[in-house]
Length: 141
Image 1 (cartoon, one colour):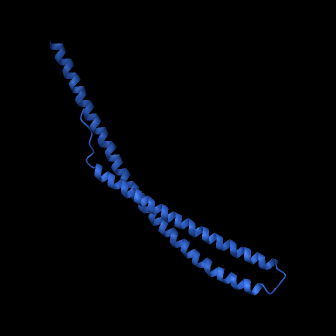
Image 2: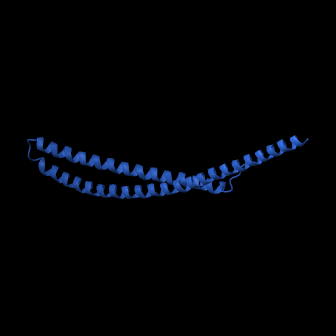
Image 3: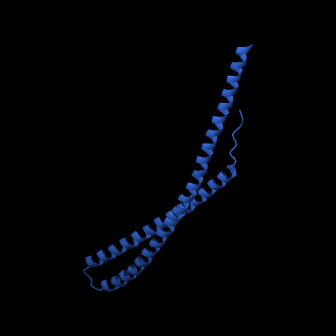
């Protein structure tokens, strides 16, 4: 039986490498998004804690300083929201690139599977033809 050789094996190998690289890029972008979201959550929690602390204090002299700090936190939260939005856009783009690379790899895998099936079909047909010829020749002897 002849050995199966997929002619596009090198192309398939390149597509596998490209898919792996794109997957790593997506993972990095996803990690950056999660870190930005965690930082935003921490800032929002800190703002809530400061406001709660201010309202629980009987000393009115602390409040003006706390409100200045809350205003600074508001600016930091606004910047962090922009960073989260940018990270989400980058993550979505990286995910689309990974999906595209994965689809390209899967196309070649399906093509290889189809060529292998055709190869096996032809090999089995040849084998059956040989067996039929042997049967026909034995009957004449």
